Length: 124
Image (cartoon, rainbow, N blue to C red):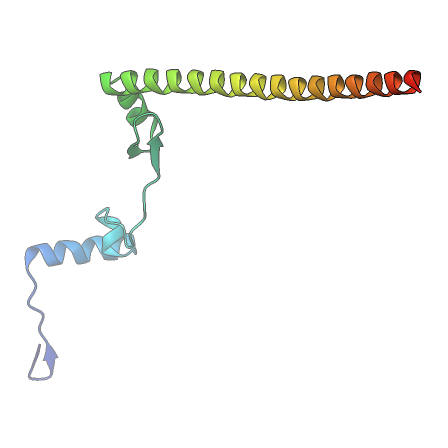
């Protein structure tokens, strides 16, 4: 505000304090006060067993992994993985057996045809 050619500032104590900090530090007030100037996303981690999102820190993971819910769901997930691996192995075995059976049937059919031709040739 200007009065009679001179500038008069009306400042409160808190405003003076912030200006003093800014002048001393030569940095913006937001940085001095610990406020981030722009939003920065924090990294997140998703526990696949629980389908639970948490901060990506060792402490958060350790706390989450020690909960009863996580332990129960992790055991269920491990059982599911074992079961699916066993089912895949069994389906692979069944496919191999089916292929072997088809090959054996083709072999038997060829053997039957060759015997039939031999019998025809002998009769003539």
